[in-house]
Image 1 (tube, rainbow, N blue to C red):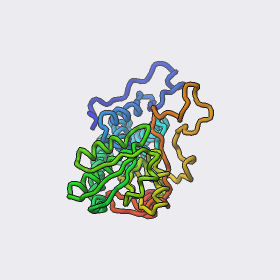
Image 2 (spheres, rainbow, N blue to C red):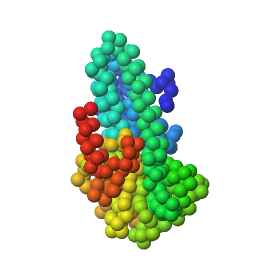
Image 3 (cartoon, one colour):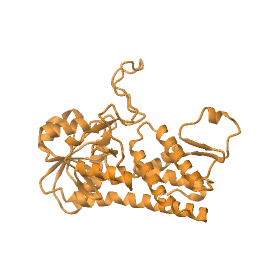
Image 4 (cartoon, rainbow, N blue to C red):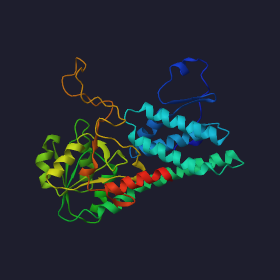
Length: 338
């Protein structure tokens, strides 16, 4: 958790250039500036186990800590500005949007109290916000406990990419003495699958690494697919690392169930039509690449992502239990009325 005493607003810039040419991710006000994008990225770099929604929640909490808002209206306005500045500064903002929305709903739920001592009210909100982030992190352990029961002796699980929820689930199953194997793709170009294989092997779990192009060949030897999610949409579909869509298609062809291990704080009230109708900036298909690029668009700045439709997903393993895509959709729609 960020040290509150060291979190503050920078003094307002004496130059008007900061307003006419605003820096991405900076919240500007008459009382100072706060670089929420820098704070968010710092949280993720300092703790690789931290998920993007949690980093977003903690960044908004830090903004609350730093702001000099004197009324609930000013505080809500600052939080709204911070959430929008953060989302606009990150190419793939789906996952952090879920965190921002959760935090805003939490604040709104308490705003009607209209306390006489606003400073005490603000401190209480900040403390509860930090507590909420802590509880959200604990959800991953609950996902592991629930999902581990689905791993039976003798099964082979197929994975793609690197997911903390999936790793926790498989490690929990191994701790329960389940004997199973894992096939994981290399997940190029990031090679996150190699990271998954290394961590599972360290836990004593037998792992076979296959080239991404071999998923159609290798998946027939698996009993099920378990992947993570960067975000879960309002229709029960998901956003995950590129390659997840064709993996789900192959699984459908082989009649292998696809399960998604994820926390409910990644639920986001967005209904995408397909891969090309999501609020994500990624230039995968480039007909005019730089002259020094002969192959595919490099992913050195961000990892590309896939949209996996709900009809390809058997169930989502969450801290609230094993849910169908329809049950997830119902929960996300219900959040509008909380």
